[in-house]
Amino acid sequence: MISVIHDTDHSRYTATVDGVLCVLDYQLQDGVMTITHTGVPSHVGGRGIAAELTRVALDSARAQGWKVRPRCSYADVYMRRHPEYNDLLA
Image (cartoon, rainbow, N blue to C red; front, side, top):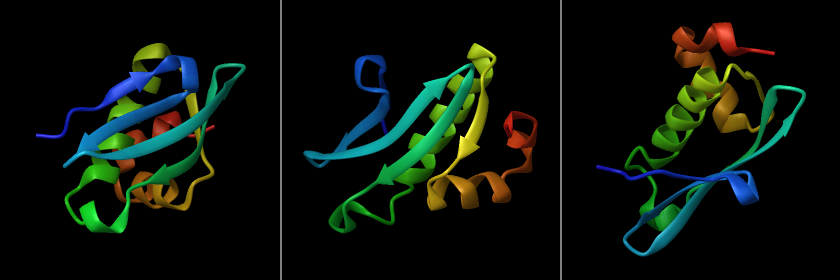
């Protein structure tokens, strides 16, 4: 299981896998979470880490009543593949 932490001070979600930091960065303005970057180093890639970071971020946005603007290409594709998050699109 991948443990994701919301680092509100730095506007990011993090997961450490095999000692490697993986991140999803966002900006929050006027109730809109703009996802700007998802970073998973290649040597820990392919394990669903980016998907879990994105899922947790989107679930958090929903819980906070925020809309989401996926500027990061990974988050954009994730949201297209998971229409259950369409109501969050800004």
